[in-house]
Length: 198
Image (cartoon, rainbow, N blue to C red; front, side, top):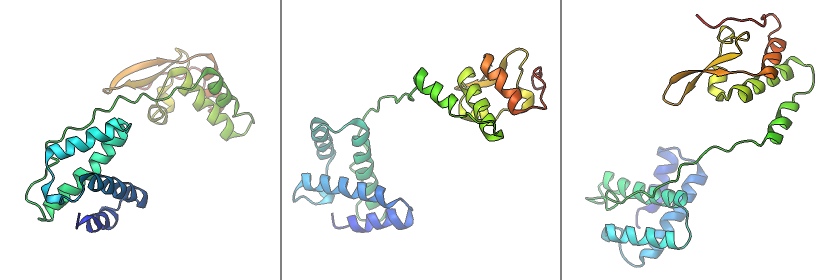
């Protein structure tokens, strides 16, 4: 516990972490050492760490918060070993909490329609935004896929754009009527029968 201030300063100055992140680590370390009581940081065992994490879990701390707490404690002990204050790191064998897979949120139909209808004026920017939103929505593209499209990638006659599945597998994404109508409005010099990229 003697070295916490030095460690926090290391995070702030040398690692360049934000003040909020360093403050969160400070609170987490204080919570751990308060739980530990009078014992020295060098006396901490794997069983102590597991007991602390189990008590935090039982107290209602979620998996992501537990992972952050563990990251702070693990980082502190790794730093103590690097700085040669300790010979070994008791956190090395500590299991990480399992984080549930976080699925991205999906807009409801009404939210999507409000978003599409937000581009209402006839300015070039508004038409561009509407064309991009229509393509994202109609083809189920990721933003990175949309921004990577070139004019010659669009096949408006066939009604398709290229995309990538996860794992970089190429796919052809179908495009519906509204998107097919808005893209030529955004790119007026482009005929509605652009061919696929060669």
